[in-house]
Length: 378
Image: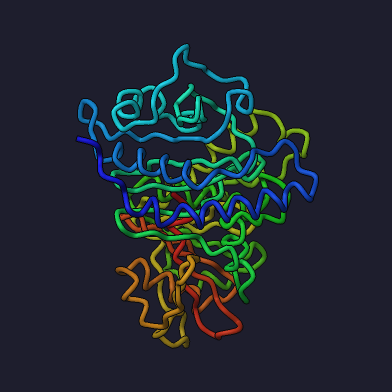
C-alpha cells in the first residue's frame, strides 16, 4: 500500500518556498553568484514527506540520519554520482542512509524526466541551497548554507505535527544578544572566527555531548563575577587555559588554513567538554577558561531573581514572564541568578533533553531575558 502523505509537509512547504524566493532574490540583487533557483513547493513537500517516513524506519537497528540537498550534480562538483539514480522513496533513503550519515554529506536530489530522484552524494552545496536534515525520528530541520564555513542557517523545524518556522525578525528586537543574531544567520563580524561565532560553536558542542551544562561568559577586564561564585572554586584553572583565545587571535591568513579550523574545532570541543562537569564553566570575553565546576551563589546584597522574560525565535511565538524555575532545574535557576547579579555576563545553559537557553540582561525590560534557541542549534 502507498505511504500516506505527511500533513505537515503540505502545511509548511509554501512558507519555506517564500523564504527561499525572498532570500535568493535579495542575494542576487547583491551580486552573489552562483545561486540555485528557489525550490518549488511540490519538491519541498515531496522531500519532507519522504524524509519523515524514512526517519521512522530502522535499518539494522539504526535510525537513518540523512541530509538531502536539492541541487544538480554540477552545482555540487566535485560529487559522487550514481550510474543509476534512485527514486526519492522511503525504502531507497533507508537503504543508503549508512553510507551518508556522517556530518557534511548530503544526498543530492533533482528532477529527472519530471520525477525527483537521488542522483548521488555531495559535500559542498551553494549558498541558499535547500537542505533537509533528519535529526531524529520524526524530527526534521530545513536549512540553507550561510555562504561561509560554519553552521547552516535553520529555516524551520518539523517534529511530528508541530511546525516551527524561524522568525527572521527576532534579530531586530531590542536587547537581542549578538549570539542569537549569529544563530539566525545575520552574523556581522564577517569572519568564521568572529566572537559570536565561537560562542555558536561552543553552544552546538555543549548540546551535542548530551550531559547538560552551563557556560558563563564574563568580562575579561573585571573580577566582579567572583562575588557570584562559591569560594574556593573546586576547579580553578591556573594559569587560565588560553588555547581557544590564542587561536581566535591568530592572523587572518593563518585562520584561512584547514589545520587552523581543525585546531579551533578541537579547542571548542575541549572547552565544551568541561561544561559536562557538575557546576558552571567560566569563560572570559577573551575566551580564556578560568574555572569549571563552579557553584553559583547569590551575590551579597542582591535580591533573589523572581522573574525572567522568556522568548523563542519562531513565528507566532510570544513573550512570557514567569519564575525561572519553570525553565528547568537548579542549573537554569542559578544561571538566571548569575545574570541577574552580573549584568555584563551571559549564560549558556544546555539541558540533557536537548533544550538550550541563553540568559542575558535586558536593559529595556530591566530583567533577565531567557532566549530559548534549541531550534537554531539542530
